[in-house]
Length: 399
Image (cartoon, rainbow, N blue to C red; front, top):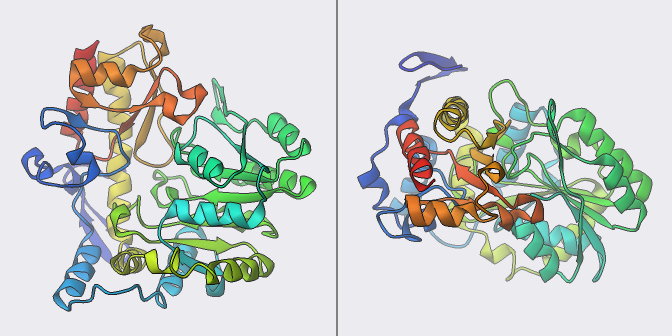
């Protein structure tokens, strides 16, 4: 683990630990993104999945050069697939064929196109609540039915997929499984054995698997992301990824869909060919530039970020034990989002409303992630340790 003030090598680069702790609230409040504009200035925002850190230098430089050149036209996508393939091989030991990589505007565009590819109206799609709220919306807007198979929590092993319930849903006729890998909001990074079991069940019952892997680069030190397509045969599957969460460039609008097989590639290519205006033209050119810079040159920054988030997840555990002992919190294996169980506080299902009204801190309400999320809140840890301490202090004040 990185320690304060110690310089640690990452390949050919060297970065100094804890630069992520140097944040100014005055400077952050100059931002115009949703996180910093949704609430009055006396509210401390920790809700939406947006980090507070400056851009990685390679991304900043690439974007600045584009602006200086007036390079802000329609997206040029040719370099995206090679950069992405370079990153996945280096980080995940996942060798992909570049021709199976398609550019889309964002993660949920890729998820929606995969839903439309693999299913028909009124088909049932399995999800695992508590889960990313747009999953519910995407399935409904596509005219499909939601089949909820909630996660289970074991005392020793933590959050787990309920494989018995998953098999029952597949056997009952579900046509697709929308997998969150790593999982938002609980932060589980599914391991090889779990994903192999998913692939086996999907193959047995002819269920397509759509794997949202946007948090994949953000596994904690010592944990390596396992891409679903690396363990599956891919005959009816896709993975959707982006640099958007790990490098904090969601507003630049760029993601990729990876086809799991040549058959899926051909079908997806034909589907997207008819949606040039709806899909291709909505990919951001600056998003392409930012993603390429992240995938090719952002590794050192990413490793320093992961070390910082590792410290923050441990700090949050300490702070909650000391100041709000009635809560339960399992440190995430990936990402910068903390899923906190507040049910023992006995204050109802929507604790986020209370924290906002009485503590002036904006958290994400757990009920938005499905019925199993009632009584929980999601807290954004993608900030400095000082701001994280203030978040908990405001939560305590609200109680």
